[in-house]
Length: 85
Length: 85
Figure 1 (cartoon, rainbow over the protein chains, first blue to last red):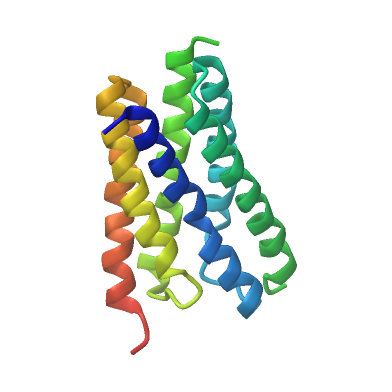
Figure 2 (cartoon, rainbow over the protein chains, first blue to last red):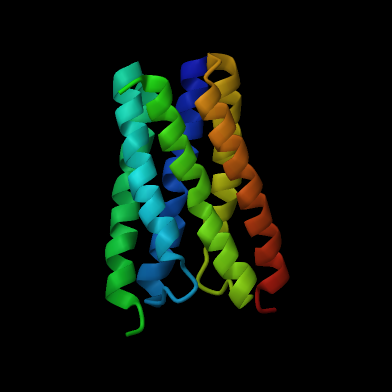
């Protein structure tokens, strides 16, 4: 398989992966079983992947991780909004 | 920053990201707020990233995603073990 197509497919799947989690949280307004550390690590790590993609000039890495960062920031905001005090 | 070091740091962070989530699930035995779709997408997408890394011969991509696949498979097993029937 062409490496760029493979990268786009892989990036597409991993970047939409957190979307059903975000939808579930927005629907149930419940984040009790979610780990805040997971969300924080993902925001930080995925942002570094965007940087890596920019240096290596690899568009699949840049696009997929940038989208995933956005979804995880929404998840982070939802976490603080819905967590039980 | 050297791109390989950046890749290793980014990969290190994203690959350990799911670990606190797995630990939380194993401790609380509760997966009600987790999205099974998120876990399935991650296992599939991260596996494709390993494949991408092999083709591009980029060790940070291979190692970090392979580790993340393992953690997510453990999360998947835990999900079916602890979900409420």
